Image (cartoon, rainbow, N blue to C red; front, top):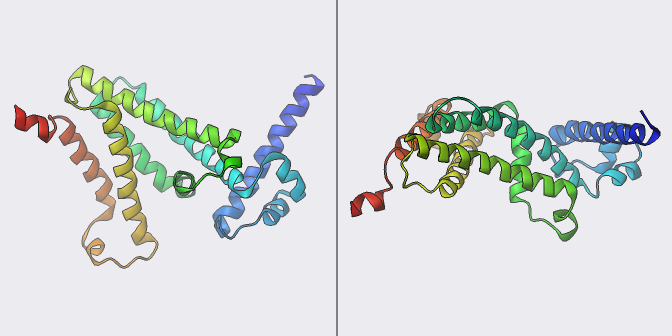
Length: 223
């Protein structure tokens, strides 16, 4: 291995170590309260070294989001490669997204923060931000591909618009997960106490899949 390759490997290892330290601090204290000083101390580096790798605390949190989106994309891609009809793939993608939110709640939180955070000019053009945007696009594209498979094999009604349906599923599933998270965070909403929340996401996925078998209501009325 040449000197340049070794230096590049060491740089990547240090970058990864900084993200590891940031995860520990962010996940323990929360992104709003955590400071770059605390992350530098955890990483056993100077704060100046952190800024050589990341422009801001926001960009560093985006790097954590990037890790989470990579995990989710791998899960979606594996499902897309299975020898199943489109509707069943769509079911598994829904469950994979829900499982991701439960197994990796901090990564899910980071992705939600990224989507809701107003990007400043300096951050939006950073390599990390662009990577997160790209990963998010790939997740939706994977979902669109599965829906298109379903339309071709007849398990999803051909009147469904793949891109529109993918966006609706993505946003609706996120809403269901947020409802689940409300109770775990101590919100006292009476109706939630009467619902088996563990079954809410699977029931929602079944409801959606039942709907995509048929034509949309507007089209059905015309027929």
